[in-house]
Image (cartoon, rainbow, N blue to C red; front, side):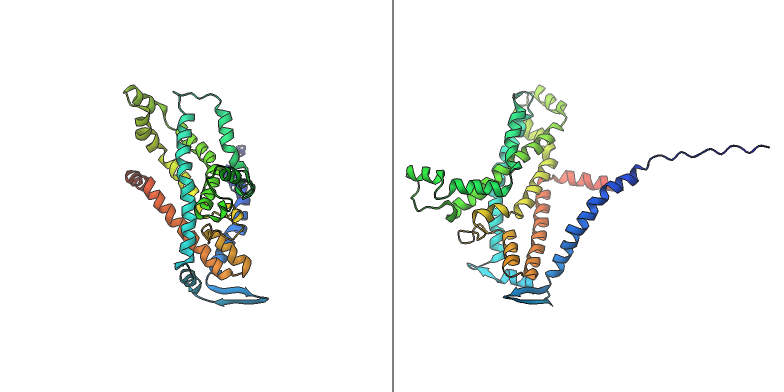
Length: 321
């Protein structure tokens, strides 16, 4: 009897294998340049390790003393970490509120079939352009415009609104307002694009059905668009919050790194940079970095709980079972 011919097995392409190969460079880069420094930072936070003159002190085990010093070192009777966290949140909130209000308004306008705005491509490009400019370059431009020799200062002096001695960057309200204004101008275009993508993903048949039933545009927005947009809006707010807590380049350039006036524009990350640049205090800087991480995580969780409805969380938990 003749043996049956062996059939060759056809091996298909292992897409899973190639997927892992393609994402491997990211994980290698992340491990070397992000994960390892994060672990080292957490380790440094428990050691006394700084430079005094030309002498290097440490590393010596310090326990939680670095964390204790962050809350016992005070400025104007307030722990420095609390004061700088307050500065950071005030400037972020002052820029984030108009950022999200205007971004929501523009996103609804640009995606409205009823308005059908012409030249949308041009307007989208214009509002997104500030996001393409480096924050340092944008800050230098604003500093030049609002400086004592700048056109805005001259205009206000000639209008008798301020005196010649007034300096926008040495007044607490104006300095914080300028930082918040720059953050608003740089990011509201990006937020608009993100919210537009979310609105365009909503089933338009729901909107059309509501309008046929006589619902006004405002009612459609609050009853249909906004609830369905909430996951995207939550994502945008949390990413903006994390970026705000890590605010550094704009206030650093405008205050020349000193947080003027009277440390009212000094942010948490600027304080980390101060500790590293002046005394090479890796222990205290590491402790502050760890606190910033947990502060960001806690606030992000609060935002998530506030924006995501309770019923949605229940459905998510049921779906995960």
